[in-house]
Length: 123
Image (cartoon, rainbow, N blue to C red):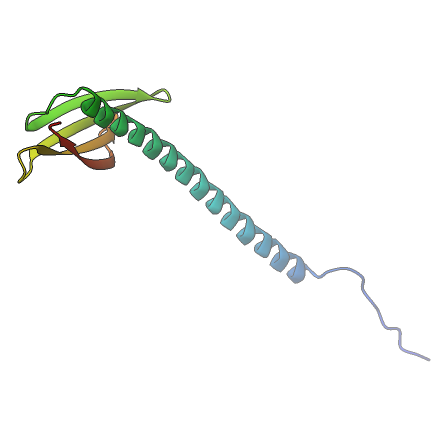
């Protein structure tokens, strides 16, 4: 008489647990990547808005047709519904007909976001 061999169909408990562990690790990595993308998008939004603030102030300085005196000028601006704080630092250059201007922009909480520099001429 032949010995009866028992054939099972399906997966063992170990195989199911290994598959679940792989899926859990993959989902955790996906969530971490999604979180990184979200924070990068937020950072890009803040940096772009801060750059607009700085460029607006530097453009206003150039369009005023007045030669700026050395010193610091505080400003604030609102871009895309968010408030930003800024400072223009005007410094003399070796050529008296030019001024170096640095614009620093920070978030409303004071976190530095951006720094732009330019040269403004007397004429």
